[in-house]
Structures are given as C-alpha cells and as structure tokens.
Image (cartoon, rainbow, N blue to C red; front, side, top):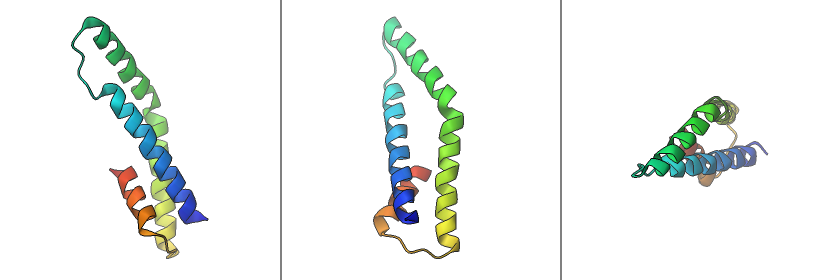
Length: 85
C-alpha cells in the first residue's frame, strides 16, 4: 500500500504545482493582468508552507520505502522524482 500511497500523493502534488505554475507562467501585459498576476502570486505565497509540507511528506514516504527496501514500479519512482523537481 505504501507504493500506491506514494504514487497518489506525488501525482496530486505534481498536478497542484502544475496548476499553480500555469497561473504565473505568463508575464502580464496589461494593468488588469498585472493585478491578477499579483493576486496569484499572493495566493501561492500563502500556500507555500502547505506545499513545502506536502513535499516533505512525499520525501519521507520515499525514504521509508528505501529504508525497508519496499519494491515499487518504475512509474512510482519516476512520479516521486517529478514531485522533487
């Protein structure tokens, strides 16, 4: 169950980060876009503590699996690496 939990958490984390990156991925060109951009940056800053905590939990799950030599599919290993980056 740990490999599946790691995969699920890493996948959700990557999706969350991707969605947040899309919000600030394009530089604003108008005043309205700049205001929205600033709101999105503030939203992300407010979520940084939770994001850092989620990343740490994923890393801990990965370390537990390494420590106990729990085998997992390559897809799960890759998703955990994606979450780190």
